[in-house]
Image (cartoon, rainbow, N blue to C red):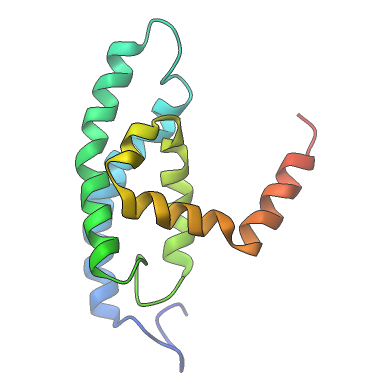
Length: 130
């Protein structure tokens, strides 16, 4: 349903190619989810530094893509692709130096988090018992 209908903005073939490339990028970016919980923990500085170095390349790829494609993951507007990738990239916030080297990613993630739907979801999440 995402690619069909009257508002279709991404040709199916392009979306498929992006998804293929995205798997490679996300494989590395997903490491941030694991790294995020212990990036700053005592005794893990070498592992954290290595993880950050590994993530610099996929962040650069994502930064270049956002710069070349109007600031969105797929198409010329915010889509479910942005939601999915933003949720993965969000975990890398424990390493702000990654975002310093990828200003388009930093701005894109901030824009994703500024959306009313994200704010509403986050407010509900914050209201949940610990």
